Image (cartoon, rainbow over all chains, first blue to last red; front, side, top):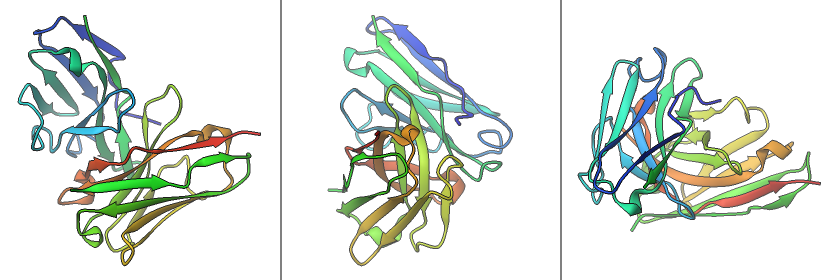
Length: 111
Length: 122
């Protein structure tokens, strides 16, 4: 069962900035283990978007950024584009479960 | 180019078994941990299991521990997931992914396959 909580949905107009929150606990994000973010577009494999809290893999636009504070983390998307519409997941490790955990997922909608 | 390709999915009856394979290429397979992640219909991503590069360190989600076994063949660049005593709630697309990161607790999954569909139904 996921113990990283995300809002079910966020939306914004093209060009706007949206944020997706990810709330964990003292045994996961607050432990502190790193937080990573994935983009999952319909019909595609999940794609790594942010690793190590705030690092972008090669090829990921700088419109995507990550941050972390205590037991929570956030993904920000600036200059929202239609192609950003999809599901976004945070991921970390939980020492109580001795395993990895994904967030509940957030659907980003471009209005 | 890094590639991981799953195979072995299909339809199986409750209580049955199935083995998934994941063929890896484009990187030194024996240097990296590997992971299985699944997504049930209409649900989010769920981590299933991770195996260290040497095959010794192994981790399972509570939902599959005791029923699923992860293994790897470093000489053949292949990851496996043996699934026994399958249940209807194991129905999902199963993704193979390469892990990266300096320590186990900070692993992230940087390359993913397209997934293999496993349907458990009578």
